[in-house]
Image 1 (spheres, rainbow, N blue to C red):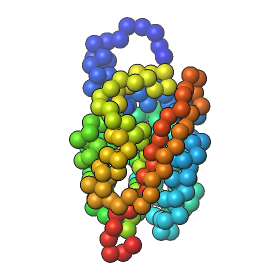
Image 2 (image 1 turned 90 degrees about the horizontal axis):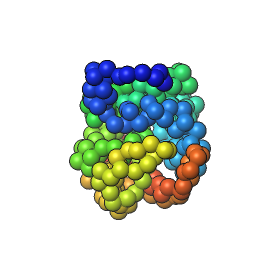
Image 3 (image 1 turned 135 degrees about the vertical axis):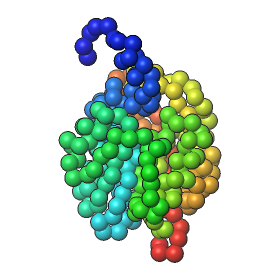
Image 4 (image 1 turned 135 degrees about the horizontal axis):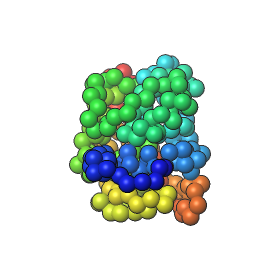
Length: 225
């Protein structure tokens, strides 16, 4: 990072950027190193891949560096659209998983065609949204799944709203739901929760402690599943 005075316009632009973009621009590849080998994440990916049709169209919400999610989906023969608000993450993902498509965009504003995806991944990408935004986005993601399509979601289950936490050494504001409320939120969006898995994971990062993670394996019911 260059040392020097920042212009007022730079400060204004920084404040206008989504908080998630600021955070993950700063973390970059460190995030992948800390989380890419989480066993429950890899197991959720395997669960989804086993249920996708050949050459499935998939959406990776908050795609980060492209690994492990987009990379695993591409390796299994599926097409991937990854969406992330962080330009640093999008650039890393494009280099690391060139077979996938990555867009720098806020998924809250991304047009989603009804029934256009066979699978959707939402790994820890809701935590910096308000509860209303999380609910609205899950409804849109459910609608973007074809009937019979599957969605996997991971979050940190906690009854917290706009609280400041330290994540990988950086301050961030987070909002989430207790476990049963996450399930209720997903079901209200129009998805069936087929199974859930709770795990404690300690990121590979200095000073990190164990984090509770919740993984939901979901399906949009319909006539062709």
